[in-house]
Length: 180
Image (cartoon, rainbow, N blue to C red):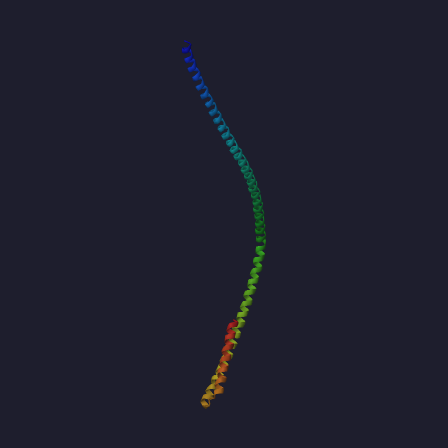
């Protein structure tokens, strides 16, 4: 009987040892999983802290940019207001000065036009005188040429003199035309 009792006790003891071994194994696995989870939690907390720091830095930069934009907007508004004020002052000054300027310009243009017309009349008179002089010289030269041809004593020197006079007259006419 004792043997029979010892068998179940041995079985119980063996099962107890198996359960103890399983329990120790589960306990070690639980500790390992707990450690892994704690490591993951620490990693995630570090990442979260880094993200929060990055977010805070970005918000600070964003606020700085917003302040700069606001400052630039204010400066731009001041510049625009100043420009508008200057333009309105210029417009105001222009309207009062424009009528005086217009009258002055009108008188100046009329004087300039009169001077140009006088110059044109003077040039026309000079051209007429030059034309008359040219015609007189030309007729004189033609007479001389006709007389020489009539006498049939054409000389080379006389022909060259005639050509030189003609060339001089053409040069004078050309110079006069360019003066206009």
